[in-house]
Structures are given as C-alpha cells and as structure tokens.
Length: 228
Image (tube, rainbow, N blue to C red):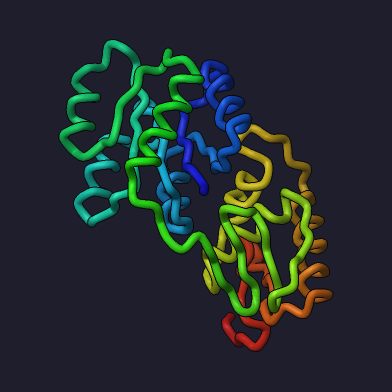
C-alpha cells in the first residue's frame, strides 16, 4: 500500500510524517502540485493526502478534474481552520474527507485507516515487469520466482520503475521516492543506486534492464528493446 502526500513545506507536518511512518505506511511526498500530477500518472496510489495551500495550482480544482475522468482514489484535503468554503467545495467535488492543518497526528492516522477500510482496494497488489514481480504489500521482489534481496532505497526505486515499465521516470522523481522531498541527495547518489540495482538484476537473470535517458531520467525496459 502506498499513499501520496502533497504538502506545502512546513515543520508543522513533521508529526504527521513521523506518525505515518511509525504506523507502517509507505508513501511518496512532494511539495508541488505538478510533482503530484506526475506521480499519479506513474503510480497507482491507495490514497492522496493533499494540502490546499500546495504551490503550483489549485488542489481542489485538481480533485474536480480527477473525479471528472473517473479517478476514484480516496482524497483527503488539508486546509487551515478558517477555510470553510474550500472544504465545502472539496466535498462537493468528491473529497472523502477534509481535515484542518492542526489535527493531531494520531487522529489523522486513524482517519486514513478508516477511509482505507471503506475504500475498495486496488487489486492485485502485484506489479509485473518482464520476469520481475513486486509484491507491494509484502515489499518483496522476485526474479523468475526467486526472491531478490535489495536494500530499502533500491527497492523503492525499482518499485517506481516497474510501475512505469517501458516509460521514462524523471530522475528527481526517483530521488524523492528514495530519499523524500527534503532528503539531502549527493550529486551522484542515484547513479550509485542504479549501478547496484543494475548489477543485482543482471546477477539474478532478469530479462529487463535499466536504461539511462540522458538529461531526463531512467527507464526499465526489456533487454531486447530497441527503443531510442
């Protein structure tokens, strides 16, 4: 299970993030709406937790647009206490809940769990790419039915590459997936992770490879692929 958390940079959010981690949730965290839109295009999330003051656009308008094209992913909007009109609009456009930004972290986690219990889960919780299989719930990956042991950050990167199989994933998106929005990443850190991941896939006999798309990012594709 993976959540999408879109929040404006604020130390006020730190207890929420810690509580979600402590409760065992996996999530991608961004602080700009454009990154959230790209994330949704590349990953199937079980819930979106979105700050109404997120830079880059109108979060409520984005919710309306998603619902208009049939996206039913549970959506929770976070607003300041005084912003009643925005909460009303969000409910009218299909939000599953709205919370104020001073909500206690424990209550927020309880709400997230309650909404997830009510929502139909995306099935199966399995992603396949070539002879690789990723069990999202168990956080395990196998190659031709043999378990592949990977460090957590490499596992997070591979999950996103597999979810976007044969499509290019931007470098900064993978950095955020592995280190978080506010994590410090050295200039060549992703290259080092990719080198280790490539070596692990090759040693396991994977029939897919990670290709570098210079100036853009990376793509997981069949070894025999002739794509430019």
